[in-house]
Image (cartoon, rainbow, N blue to C red):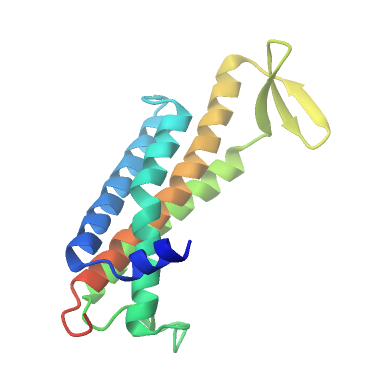
Length: 180
């Protein structure tokens, strides 16, 4: 674990840019699959879709957090509602606002998918059911599939938001020529 942490803290600018691009691909992967699921298409199995999103997102998000925290010695924002408190000084404000819009879009996806969940979809004795606390309701395959789509949208929405953050943080740190 310590070796991994040391490696993440020593990533070069090129490495951070590569991780930023990977996270950017994670943003597009997650957003594209969320749109496909909302349209009723399932281009990939949930395990593949979420697994690829995690592969593209997690390393860059972790590296972005660690490199920014170490590079800027951040603890918390100085002023909660001031953009300059959250964004490194050399990053254009439009980039921070664009990242915020994307994070909001993924957050909205998660909230709407949660609101649409009627229970945990599962199979019992070859029947499609939704489990909600102690209540079990038998449903048809269309309802079952829709509920599993909502669960996948939640996972992709969370990973998509993390991908935006990872892409932003890695790019911010990689392009900071003053502090590198």
